[in-house]
Image 1 (tube, one colour):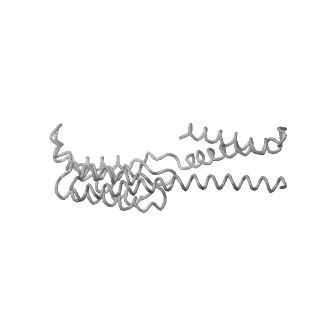
Image 2 (image 1 turned 90 degrees about the vertical axis):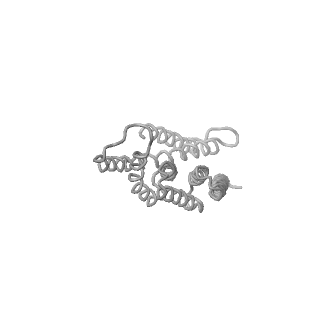
Image 3 (image 1 turned 45 degrees about the vertical axis):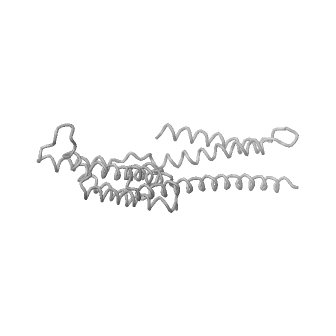
Length: 223
């Protein structure tokens, strides 16, 4: 087998292995999300609302693009919060809204999934937080005139964006891939079959590995 064909074969094998690993990870995430979603529905049927919130939040946290159980899990959390608010169970309402919000924010990277749901929650939470503050048995009660100011304060805090910089997030991901892939290819093509150094392959792929590592490290410090 010629050297060029051998190199392409190795590259295809590497890509195939990476694809299988990605498929295995995706399957694991999907299975865990489905298990948590089913557990949440069981808890809901048994009127164990705190347990249902826990399981639906867990299901939504197992996110990947296209996961069919993330959306329904968030929908259940919002439904629990809405019903709790209508029944003036402010503690549960805050817990359910906050769980849905945390699940969304906890799965974002260079973009925020379910952004419309996040905006919906952020719009409802200030009123619920105000009512919860009034109903809370501990601590000083706010004066009636503080309602508008406090709701505006809650809304502003909820809209504060703590997301990592999208550019540096992409740099970190690409740098890590370049580092690992470059190291593997440098070891494979940087040496001949008899153990001699193949300068062209070593410099090319070694440079990719070093550049990827520096990009990954620089991105971590820049975030």
